[in-house]
Image (cartoon, rainbow, N blue to C red; front, side):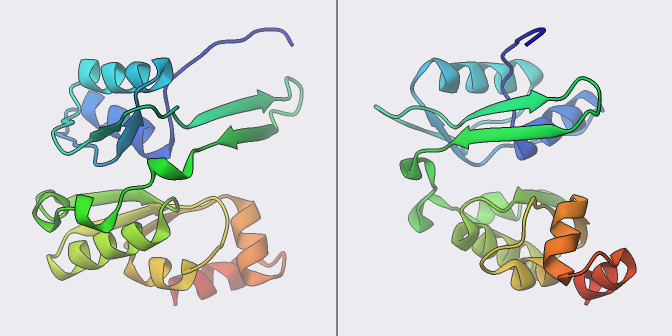
Length: 175
């Protein structure tokens, strides 16, 4: 190992910080643990100007942690992660007015039932839905059908289309 550094992150928070730096207004709807990692995540998003008024904190819970190993030569990444189940939002914690207040809903494949509900509300309200998904899973078809923009790696394409044919996979995803 040549170096180590710790950063807060995740697909959605990273996108929100980038958008915030580009002059957009952003809000995070999700949960933080009350450990050091959760405090780092929360304080970083606050410092960047992301609205956290709809975010919640779970007491006595550790945060989602990922260790990303990057091969220095190939650039290939291996990701090890742990996320306590209790960090999942519950249906009564999701406010449709918050979800539909913006112009874009950016989401990932975590907490798929809550994600689907948020995407349905967003689509009904005319809010664009961006989906950043690593692997196909339960309800991928419905999430894809609710999404206006889809961000996926080639591993998703291979598994979703069950072939190495990128054109076929793109057609399947667009349907």
